[in-house]
Length: 300
Image (cartoon, rainbow, N blue to C red; front, side, top):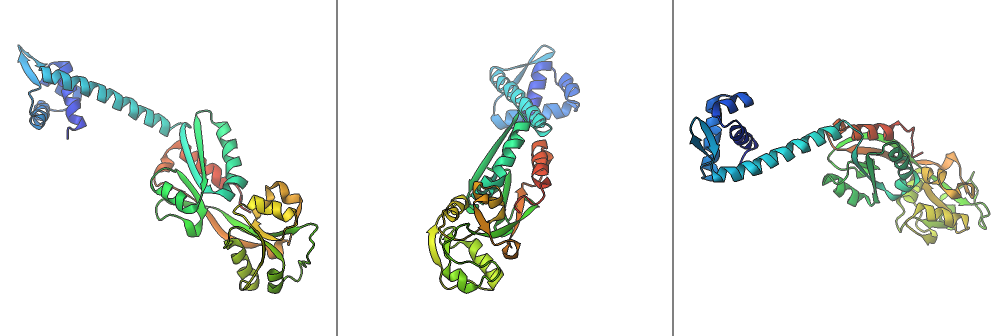
């Protein structure tokens, strides 16, 4: 493999038409220049220079490599300069991934306002399942990841974002009895319930935190994998549901449903922002991280 330093030496000698002058230009010894050219010629098995009086000039093969080397080194210099500029400016792309609920209720709005502040910055948001998001982050297709603590990847640096709180909502004009002061496990089995997917981990965690266990059966009326649509179903009188508090607080339906109040709110765990080690040296990454972590408990 030809080394970049050998191409730099080739270009310097070709332009100076002298080994000694090239050595001065590169601040190395003449013997180092001669050895570098010799090693390059041995590697490609082609003579690159020939003597012409007191000068050294390129052979026909050397001219071809010189043209390639000049273009390569020029492009390399431009690219390095561009990278350095990107490092110190709010330009380029910021790619961030999180769960759909967190994205729709909080992150998408925050990042939209943030993107409007910086004309040269491109913001890319990916909403999806945690397994897909972790794979994208580990393969460097995402700069940031926002996930609950138990779902974090094993690589990257992390910063605490917030604690997610779950709350219980039920219809304002419910045609079933619900007593916020005396709710029990038997009530949970009886009351019509709306689930987030079949398992509904939020409901399971909430029940175990409040009652110490999960009921053997539920009166399930509606199942959907969208907290927003769950709130709509609650508003329509379909039943009660457990949803993240931050989803409710930013939802159109927040004034159209009742909650059981703080007594029945439970922690759904901590959410973290994960970013690649060393990436905070880039101004756009540093600035985005600062913006995201300055919010006071955005998931509450």
